[in-house]
Image (tube, rainbow, N blue to C red; front, side, top):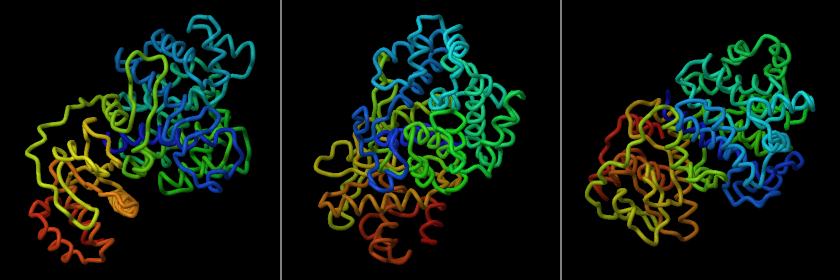
Length: 447
C-alpha cells in the first residue's frame, strides 16, 4: 500500500469534515461567497479545524478494529452507545437506533422494519478507518466488513452497499491505482439486487443538477464521485462538494477520504491539516487528537508498526537564510522559542509546528507523488508567515535533504535565482544543503 495515500485517507476525511462543519445544512455556494476555511463555528460551535461526529465515529471504529484485530460487533455497539450519550452532534437515525435499548443484533433491522427509512449517510461517513484496515485483506473481505459495520446502525442494505463501493474505491487508491477507473469493479461487488439501483448514481454522466438530498447515502456517494471526477486536486474536489450545501461536513468527509486515497497526503494543504483537532466522546483514552496522531493511526490500521522517532542526532546551528527565515534540524526545533516552526518531518508530538508538510526523503518519485504541490505549499506558507513579521524556523529530521530542498525552492521561487545560483547560495550558507536526493534535484532543475 502507498504510504502517502494511507495517510491521505484519514487526513483527508478529517480535513473535509472540519472544512464542511461550519456550512452544515446551509444553502449552496456559502464557502465560495464567504471564503472562510477551517473557520469553525456552525450549529455546534466547532473550533477551527475541529472534526465532527463523522470522524469521531470513524476513530471509534479504528480503536475497536485494532483492539480486536477485526470486527467485534458487540464492542463497536458499546463504543457507539457510549459515544452517543456524550456527543453533541449525533445523526437523527443513528441516535434513534443507538438509544433504542435493543441489542446490536436487532436494533437497526427493527428500526428499518418499523420506519422504512434507514439509508442516511451516517454509516458511509465513518468508513475511512475500516476501509484502510481491510484494504490489505482484499476486495471481498473489505466489502463484507463494510456491510457488517454499516448494519449496526443502518438497517437498509443499500446503506451497506454504498459503504462497499467506497471501501473498494479507497482500496484501489491505496494500492496505487486510480479509483475512478474502477467504479464498475466496485459496482460489481454490490449485491445483485441493489446494483441496478446504484448504477445511475455512480455513472460518470451524473451531476448535482440531477438533485437529491445529500443526507441520503447514495446521493452523498454520487456527489463524492462527481467531485473527484471533475476536479484534479484534493482542494478543488472538497471545496466543490461543500459548495453544494446541505450535509456539508459529511459529503466533504467522504470526498476527503476518497480524494486522499486518489491523491495522497501531499495534496492536502498544510493550512488545513496543521490545525486539525478533535476529541472523541465516549473513549477512555484519546484515539487521535491532531494531524500527527491521525497519521500514526492510519499506519497502524494498514498493519505497519509505528516506530518512535529515532535518535535526533546532534543539534545543528540555526542558520539564517534571509530576513525572518532560518533553518535547523529537529533536535533544535524542539527547544526553539519565538519562531513559527515549519516542519518537514514527523515531530513525535515533541512540538506543535505552525505548519507541518508531508515530505518523504526518498528517491522513489511515487513516495512524493505531488512533490510540486507540497513544496509550493511550503514556500507559500513561509511567505505568509514572514509577511506577518514572524521569524520562520524551517526544519526536517536532520536539517539536510528536505530542508535543503525547500530552502533552494524558496530561493528559486521568491528570490528568482536559477537552479545553479540557488545551489551556490545555499552552499554558501551551509554545506549541509549539499544535494542528497536525485528526485529532489530533478524537481529543482525543472523549477
